[in-house]
Length: 338
Ligand code: KG4
Ligand code: ZN
Image (cartoon, rainbow, N blue to C red; front, side, top):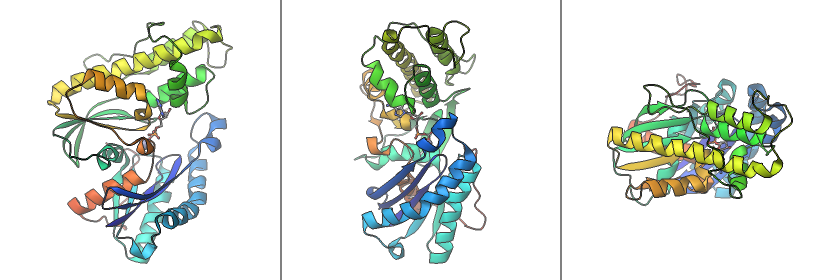
């Protein structure tokens, strides 16, 4: 079964062709980082326009790389949310148009669920269930109870910044480029993770929820001085920045490990499934391996951690086989979706 996947939830346009839910024939992604970085965040209207510009080009590139014609496509899968409304409408209307014009069935899938599904696409065996899912990205830090594939319930989420967003903001305070995650990971290697006693937030009576905004403020005050503002010049000498990066990463991941331990116990999880851009971080992967030596852990391939359409096509294959097609006339984007 050949599935065309389409991703346009935020600031990446993605087109992929995936065979039988696992074999990636092409996974084309165009990032809009350069478009949005002068504004310090994603500008929804600009994101929509960029998606419109990139779609014909990426579709052609994906078909060419996989040597597949549109006539050979058996299913079109599109991310229907969560995300920004304009970008979602563009991806979904592209999928609906192709589906109706070419008479190919179409299915809408959840982008967050697709991040978790990415980890299963490269796995040799299915995960022992129930599984604990963790999505850590620029927009999400969420824990899921996974009873079976396709049956997810959220058991913890961030009350303020997502963890990737905290990495991006901490990086900006340390004068590192966007996206901040890879830059912090690199700088942290040269620093002492115990140099500063940073700590992530704790929410009363909500042991599985995350809070990273206090951690971000600790970095702000350490670098710019207590009461300092984002635009102020640093008071901390440059040679201490690596220690700040390492201590920040240590605090953020200590909190992730703590929540994983609590979540695993809470649901009696038999395995761990990870997804999202922050799973690119090798220190995180090592910390999980150390903390859970006996629990099977499923990670996405490094090429599938960031937003991409191969994970949409993979999940789309599964959803179509389990539940059937979506109706292009009634399916609408969902900006908030679990
Ligand atoms: O999954 P993704 O593309 O975006 C959303 O769906 O939100 O993830 C992007 C996020 C950014 O915040 C980026 O800084 C973070 O993933 N990230 C990392 C690393 N690589 C990317 N965070 C920590 N360490 C990394 N190596
Ligand atoms: Zn994502």
